[in-house]
Each structure stands twice: as structure tokens, then as C-alpha cells.
Amino acid sequence: MWVLFAFMLLNTAGNLTSISGPEKLFMTPLTVVLALLSLRLAVEKIGGRKAATFIKRKEERRWNAGNIRR
Image 1: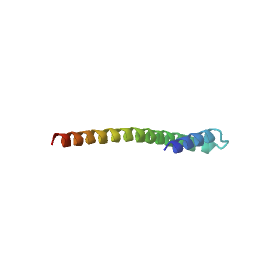
Image 2: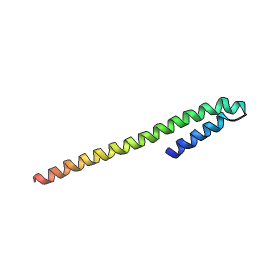
Image 3: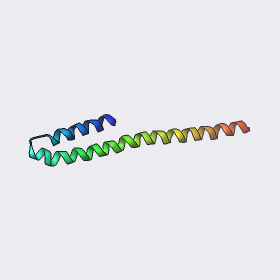
Image 4: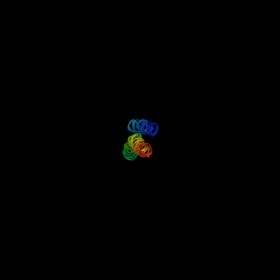
């Protein structure tokens, strides 16, 4: 996702420097929105991975604690 975000930023820069009016007018806002959405997905992917690891470890501790008592 980070590569896609970087690509969209470069694409936005290219659209801003374009001499074509319609490209600046229509494609620049589109690539900005796509860059922001891909940034959000990349950040959520990192956060989701951390949350999943935390939940998995919590479940393992709970399972291990139950086996020790028996």
C-alpha cells in the first residue's frame, strides 16, 4: 500500500506540472483523493496488524493459563 501511496503522490505532482488544462482540473483532485485513500489503507493495515497480534497473544496467554491450572 505504501508503494501505491508513493505512486499516487508522484502522479499528483505530474498532474500539477502538466500543461494540459483538463488534466490539471480533473485528474489532480482525483489522484489527491486516491493518494489519501491509499494512505489511510496503508496506515490501517499497520494498525490492524498490531491489533491482531495483540489479540492473538492475549488468547495464547489465556489458553496457557488455563492449561497450567489443570
